[in-house]
Image 1 (cartoon, helix red, strand yellow):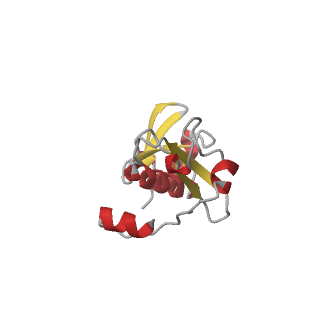
Image 2 (cartoon, helix red, strand yellow; image 1 turned 90 degrees about the vertical axis):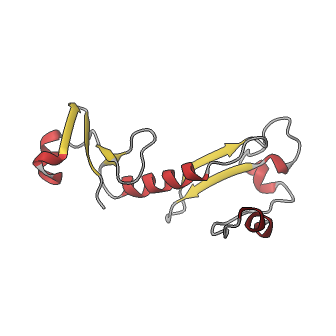
Length: 132
């Protein structure tokens, strides 16, 4: 499986792949779409953090390819939001502004990130530059 992916894409596979000939994993995690019949339709991605917690799962039907840019974007966003009181807006990319968590007041955010570094759109919606 990995060899085929590397041959066709020209890229090295640097992530775990589960070959599930018995369908045990696919059925355990409800990864087979109804009516698909076999595991060739399984196109699931699980992002698991160092504490072994599933942080994100994506399942694509057999007819739709995975969006690796979105997978990498999600990993970047998860790592960033783990680093501080942040959320990422829709379609956020590394280097763009992030949302200050609503649990942090505007005053505290300005003290923490800098007076001019916090843009208040609404009292509950403030943006700041993501830490590098």
